[in-house]
Amino acid sequence: MMVSICCRTYNRKNLVVDALRGFLMQETNFPYEVVILDDCSEDGTPELLRDYEKKYPGIVKPVFLSENFYTKRGVYPIAPLFSKATGKYIAECDDDDYWTDPLKLQKQVDYLETHTECVMCYHPFLFYWAESDRYELPSHEKPRDYTSLELVGYSGRGYTIHPSTRLWRNVYNDATAGDFEFCFDDYSMVVMLGMYGSCGFIESIKPSVYRRFPTGNYWGSLSAAAKKQLHVDMNRRAYDFMVSTGIQKYIDIRKKYL
Image: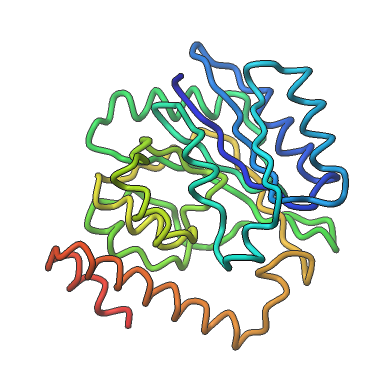
């Protein structure tokens, strides 16, 4: 398997269909799978995923949890999702976001196949504000390539490496599972992946869409103070992870964010 598309969903029946449409429209010269984990939804999402599994056998591979992982443990269900991925590369997309380019995966795989120094590549994305039906650029900054050390020192601000845009080498295994459990959020996962290589930006891929809601998702529901504290917590998590590696140059890079 060349690519595992990994998606987590919870009570997003009416939105996850857009994500699935983007996954299944991909035009590739290699096989890919859609590993989609349902975190014990109660809105009919499991039934929807079973229908897709029947319609696309061997491609759509749902994983169903019997209890809500996030509510019980306070972290995203990383191991139940990534442990099912068999691909050489992993593409991510949240259940309320979606892709617009049918050549996304092909272009990203071609890039990583020829840029062996890179652990990851990403591409443009847009914010979509649902309440006003408008799209906007996520930042006035120009997206760029990152060296390995720049990824380790990733700030998570400006033009970010959004999950819906990135493809990375599948370094998840029994030995690294604990690292992924520690770095369970989008930000610290990018930092952790920096230990494995650099990151390239591919401008020619059409933007993916990151839906934004005033209060309809986790980030939108947070106050300004809570968002600030979340950044503090993520920086602390990234620093603590690097301390656990014992690699001083990485520790020094992350220390400046404390």
